[in-house]
Image (tube, rainbow, N blue to C red; front, side, top):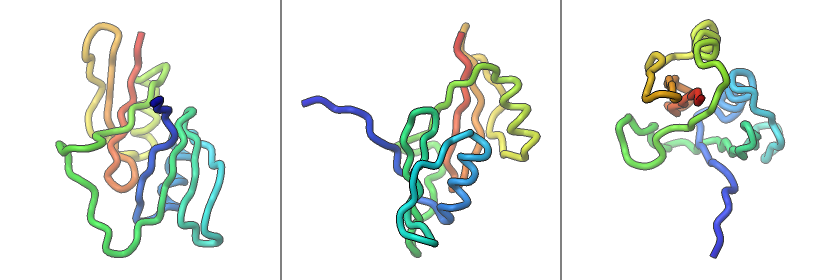
Length: 125
């Protein structure tokens, strides 16, 4: 058997607003919508990663509070972490941690995306 990555699937209280965040803040590109005027799913390409953002039905539980089991965060590599963190802060995106030097050649920071999704930006080199 061979496995090949296909997509990341998120559920959202407001799929349209969540998709707008990924497009406007993280430069994702919308590639499709399903469900008509009030889409049930929005399909994005985020740096080559296919992402489905689905409208969560009423009664869906809240996002997990870290630390927790399961998918912990989305990691996005950037060229200049200092400029990226400054840009996110200027946009009012909640930063969860400042820039941390993990080891030589790896710097990271975390911020909060829609629906409690933790997003890591990292600079390697």
